Image 1 (cartoon, rainbow, N blue to C red):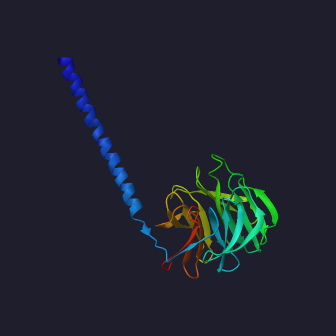
Image 2: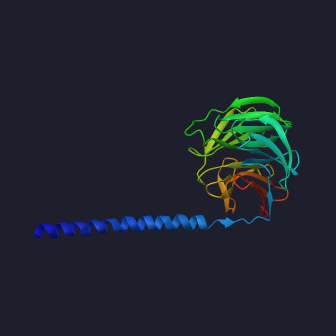
Image 3: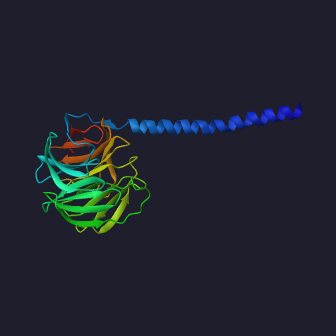
Length: 260
């Protein structure tokens, strides 16, 4: 009987030792939820259908009236209007295209996720150059997701999706200068540059959010977005219009950002 009481007492003590741990976990979870819920929700002012399967990434062209995007399924590059109408399909066919950007030299640059490669094209889709970007590979399907080009220094900024989430800065010849670890979202699926305010915009598929950052990937402000599988982003600082394209929905969303 005495040993049974002792065993019961030990069980009682073990339960009470576990209570603080349980309370801590519940508190931490509540804090995380509260932090997530404090993000302002952006509501679209317009939504357009896009007749392209599994669209990924966005970039303005020479003017702010046209956009470029790529397709995961077809591995092609497309030129579209800001209302989602397909204007043309470029001749180039890639392998695993995930990112595209227009550069001021009348060229397009696309990224191959699994190959960790950047390819330079002319505006008809003729391949001009190709360069591998050496980064540590943890998972073939968690590689490059976006690319953008800054007009001030002509540097490229390449986005690695996760494991690790990275912002890779290169010079105009795609030589790596530095990289910055990212930690403000669960993954990173699209990027664009605001060349007026010298800032970056990064969209996250898993976190369903967009984040305004410094050119070093430091968080300035984040917003929640009602978009499934957002994989491309383009920002017009002249009108404060933000375009986001959905992979699974084949839709182009337009948001109006309040004055910066």
